[in-house]
Image (cartoon, rainbow, N blue to C red; front, side, top):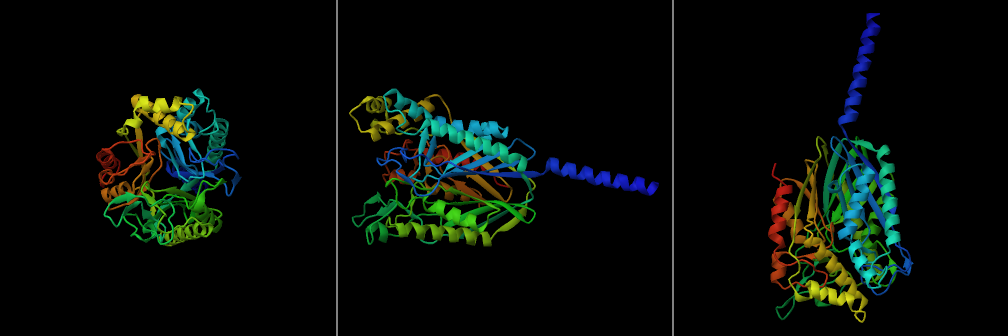
Length: 455
């Protein structure tokens, strides 16, 4: 009888240990949703040629991290940008689905140009002057939010324990090049765009400052790899504006990798690449798109071969908030932008840009800051920076924690447009997709240092 009593208590103790493990371990859920825009939708916010065909789909891919604290949601969208009220709406909607808070929902866009820009306040301003649906289709947007939120909710009961993360990186050959080109007359121009003519100065110039490495973080449940997040710093387009909706070469590379690993969710996020394009290596042909996709894919494969596994004993979430200065130029003053918005003789592109600028200025004047979130897994950290942050900020984040594996992602809150470094401002960088002014670098350095503390 005592033997059975001992066995009973032994089994009860094991069961108790299992319950404790289940309650205190970390779990991961994955989800993937089609968010392809309809035919007739505008791409990149201002492109003249609207969607005429679907070359390949646009997707929302993400994970939900569950543990001792409130859930954390990470989602990467095959969209050009999510800005202002739309960014808040995405985070609030997914927070409700995951039963967490807005700041613990990390949203980034991949920034493909044959994909939409969404900004609810800008579209409301456009509606007020008769340009209904010119920036984006609000009914479609609501449907995407509903679909992704539903997928988040469905994924959580299917979550699995995560026991380890694994980190790896690999150089990517002949994809990234810096926009900054020194011409033969000694003048610096940021004129290396996404494609260049063969034997042009842009094609022949040195690559310039880039981050050559694709980084990957894998999430493991024992020996099973549940998801892999990869990131590389380059503008993700080979050609665009011809009416074909596409996730471009980064989406093609991710899908190729997904076919290799059907039971592992493959996610991709664009690094800090406001000043990085494929322009040195891309002539804008269909063949070049396939070649860029293959080079990126090979980087993903090689990074996977170098994965270094570490047991997870904590996941820390940290967050800083900050304000960036608004654009210093006269065309970006409220009266000037309002004048363009109200001018029914002005080009629709210019009126859309004015509406987006006004929406951003309104946000600033309300005192609403930008979030800088950090996921800290001990052996690796993930930070998401705003808009088209230049690659210098990615390199800065890595230099702040040289002892660790830092993945810096761009295209979080995108109202900023381009976020140049101090040197780029000194070199004369300017563009109508820049809504911030000089002085960003010191602010971002301070906040990155705060969310990436030394061990």
